[in-house]
Length: 321
Image (cartoon, rainbow, N blue to C red; front, side, top):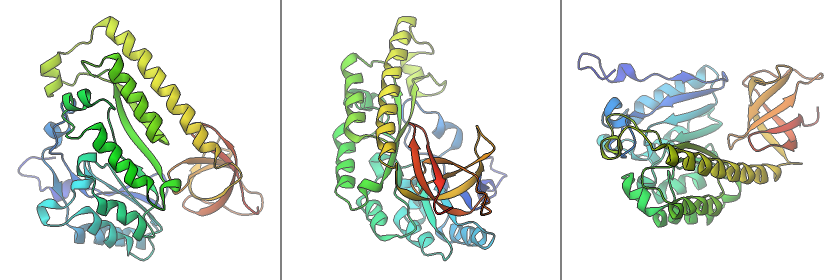
């Protein structure tokens, strides 16, 4: 896709998501960060952003075709537009003003580039929903440095504390990425990771055991294989992290029981086609019974009373059905 004889703009495609009312919109591609474990900069090239005008026209066309929920995508969208003398807050404010946009989200944001102005956008833009993916990757300063993340644990928590001071913190669904077992991770490093999870209390974590990627700095520095004994330790650590994350997610989801929330219907439930599934403004999955009194279709917004919680999803009933 990055061959010289193919224009960059021709590789940017807007993709319809599971709902006809929701779409993913590529705002930028590539990455300049070179985290030591990551192959993305080598295979996707340097950061390249579309212009705000291009994205605005794209979204307006989608709105005219029924889309009301948009997620703006970039490997590190916090650095959007810099080469065009534009920036993410301006993009969010522009798209947020488009008539017909009901939900606006973005991902992924690198903590090193996450600004106070982005936080302000959540306060000011009505369509910008309280959902944020802010990958920490680890909780140990030693490991973060080895990963070449460009920030410390304290820097990350400073962002979290600023978010906690906002009016939307209690409604914010915050998610992260974590890598367990990065080379050199000792027990204290892992405890630092666990304590970060306990302090932030994520709604969800995408956690993985470190895997060597050919071509990355970590692959060159630490090799292509992980010692079997260490692997067994990392598997146990990952399970501990995973179990704690599930406990926290379950506790946070239980707080929604008895509340009536707005759902964007995505279609039949994966596990039970007789039920429908949708997402809250915070991206939480809600499964609910089909209505005998009203027709509910994919792309509709409906009010659902939450009746039961699980770590990964919620169950509910149509309100006033």
